[in-house]
Image (tube, rainbow, N blue to C red; front, side):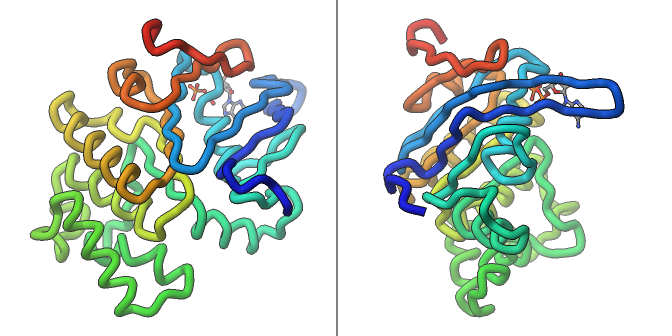
Amino acid sequence: MNEPMQDVIRAERLGKTYAEGKLHTPVFDGLDFAVQAGETVAILGASGAGKSTLLHLLGGLDVPSAGEVYVAGQKMSALSDAARGRLRNRALGFVYQFHHLLPEFTALENVMMPVLLAGGSTAEAQRRAQVLLESVGLGHRLAHKPGELSGGERQRAAVARALVNNPACVLGDEPTGNLDEKTAAVVFEQMLALNRAQATSLVLVTHDRRLARRLDRVMELREGRLHALAKADV
Ligand code: ADP
């Protein structure tokens, strides 16, 4: 509980082995990682290196086989499922390669959802969702459902949703990986600008070294360990 406040997420001696019957897949063991308030970190690594697994563990979406994850100073393993869910909704934002917007709801309603889940009023949710959607250039698409938006617009709505509760940290798993290069660049710049404006930390899993270079730190996940890369080597 009394973790230093400058680390918004900290993983200590993290281990993960997937076990299915007799098949054991060790992904990492003894991994240490910390993200400070406002810091942006890129995680590179070959396919299968464990990047998505790491992000799931940092976000409390999966349980480590060993070690601990602290989010906003709270030890994830010490929380009930409900408390972990509340902390996730309040302190973290998630953006994936696929938008995961709810198809039957409008862009505005999708972005309102995390605010309502956190106990905000409808009026407050509406106000904040609208501000966020306007800041990603979707002020004219509030009433559109995901199926009526372009791929880039859907990802921009997903970015707005991730940031609407002003989280301590956004976890992004290839958030622009499914877009053409030009659209990806626009969505990435908007995400980075919003993160910086809100002083929200960002942990971004990406294959794209050009995007990775734009962040404060670049790490590579290799053989179960995170290695810091010099920008010149990215
Ligand atoms: P990356 O995101 O870097 O491509 P992943 O985290 O998805 O890597 O996967 C890391 C390793 O764990 C891979 O070898 C993958 O096959 C394995 N893995 C991922 N999810 C599971 C699972 N649910 N059950 C068993 N093995 C898994």
